[in-house]
Length: 206
Image 1: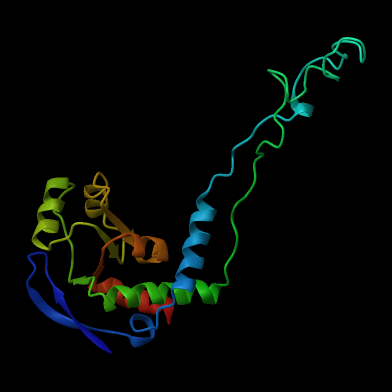
Image 2 (image 1 turned 90 degrees about the horizontal axis):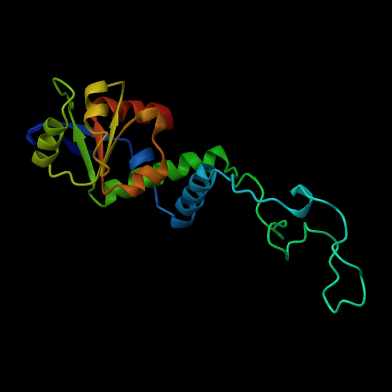
């Protein structure tokens, strides 16, 4: 097992924690990570783009002018896609872009993402991250002491002061361990885990 230092909000070492090799020491395959991240982003797409086809347009079905003798194109009616106000040819309709990946693959990808952070030495273990009140300035002061510039902070239970204090800072994201996912781990430079959340993550993935 890998042994990692646990630090406090001031950046001082207070203890150590063992990280399970079955989660934090898994061979990383980029193809698996790519598949799961692609699935996550595809499932987030709204798929609400829509246009009106000629059958959706309100208007007369009367033939605009006679078929022959005018030298013009053979118009059927005013709903033609070639006319202003007509329908759209081959335009988008609401659809779902989502697709599914097997649960075993998603779990494996999550382990790989965690392993990659440990391999790159981009994991930070905190004993706790407590704020006396909701204050963004207090959050940034602690983040500065810990040299966190772009971080995903994983907590084990609801912490309103921490969650709300970091809300206005786009480079930080606070997430409970139940919502931990591959995309957010890879998107942020540093993965910050509370000591209690490490056990929660291991309980979820083992």
